Length: 155
Length: 208
Image (spheres, rainbow over the protein chains, first blue to last red):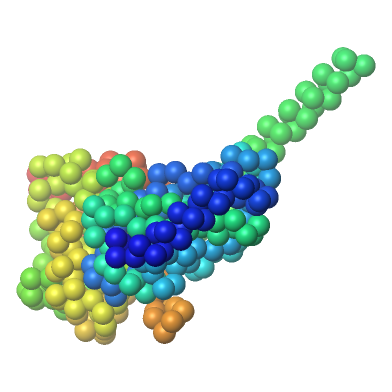
């Protein structure tokens, strides 16, 4: 994603502004941990990214959406598997995180679905993913791209 | 006053425990228990379909008889469940090592429109080398799913794309082609390796 210095610069500015002037009620206390994603085959298949979103502050925060230069349509999706063993996937509702709580985006549950990739996701690279919150705040994280068969942030 | 508080807390504690037990019953045995997953798959010998594996070989249910078998339905445009399950399967196979060396491991696509033989070959190449990818004409994929009692459905997605809902269970058969058990997607993953051992063991028992 080094081809997009403009976007990287923008997210840096946003990060700096969030740090220097905590004007947002809650989202400046959001910490994103253990972000990871799987490499893609080309750009036709959607990608997925996973992470833990931790609200370290004292206000409830609501995660409302995602943006990334990597994909035209990044969305939080949720996989559900019913009693008959059939899995389906649909856009998730807004995700509310209480003070001190975390929400895990992990395989088989919530995930950042990266639709309409602009570039292939190449193992060993990273891409910026910005989480937007209902208070207008944003948190940007660099997501490492692991192998297609990766099972978690360490593999 | 203090004593009265203790009694009240005690009563609340008993109430909470009773509630948890109640919830446990409801989930495990009561109306909240998982429904039996439709019908069980047929024995492989009773199935009838013709597909092509990712190396271009003609395959069918008879290809699988003679060795224990693990089958999973999915599609390569699936961003979450399918790579997760295929990497889980790869991990189980690594754990089992030589024990599972004689096992058939098959990933059957429910999306033959996009999953050509070439697409399957590229995709399965990223996972454990024992995993074979099967695709074929839509009507043959439908017959395969019918035999396994697997279901799938094409669902329109935003932007003109589509995704597939599909049975995410892993099916385990013994060497004679009889169903041994299934690994459900939502069950704790550490149950999987012992279940695969059962399919392998029933093979040994069947032979001796």
